Length: 352
Image (cartoon, rainbow, N blue to C red; front, top):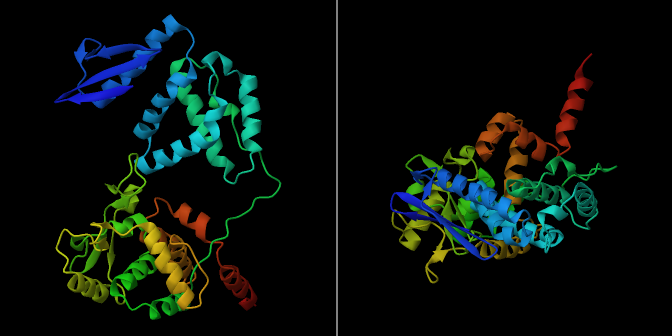
């Protein structure tokens, strides 16, 4: 399947069992928008399904890939596609739409729930997406047949983090201004690593830092690519805290950076420093400081944990981290330190 843009219009081309079908118009009109092109593509398959009666699902895998990248953000779509290909796809290879009966779906649901992997929820989520996708091509099964089995015990995620004292201990062993700036931005602002890597000189204003994009190496076709932030709430601006402005000025001067330059550029390779390079630096510095090893994303947990235990309003923490909902903040982070329950205990104990 392909949708091509030709100046101010679209061309839709589909291939079903070796037969190519091309459309420049839809319902008698020029295909002027991408949504019209998608509608045209869907209707072509529905139209020709009456002739073929039953689809080979192998013929639809490429269409499903396109479907994912239209429906979800590119990095999410690539992650979903990889998981689908690794776990789900094998259950549909060499099958027809007519083979996907309710009893087969019940077998599939049971098989996925009993996989020896963590995060079964994502695989159930993906098979439901695929079943909904197949419904566009004649499948009559409802995706509600798939669900995650209730477990007798729910295991909570155990996040590592640095306390403020541990973070200062880490910074103390770092001499390089750029590296100090990297880990200070991660801790003080709880930045996602993609947000950190996307920072340019022009994002550092006179009195604030602007977070307005992400940089990823996990796009559909590889290579470094600039994307919009994760959600609309991820667009945010921060005041300068502690030594951030001083470190930024030092990095700009030392590296002779211009307005449009990325802050964390590797000039030898002419590209932004990679996540694995940041990981190696963190391992080196944490070892020097004799600290436990944490993941890069756990600086975000460290920031949230510190703010929660300073009794900052959860709404303010959600805004600081760029969460779309305060519920996310409370669900993910509030259990990290037992001191919150100790505070409640002390309140009750003080009552007469």
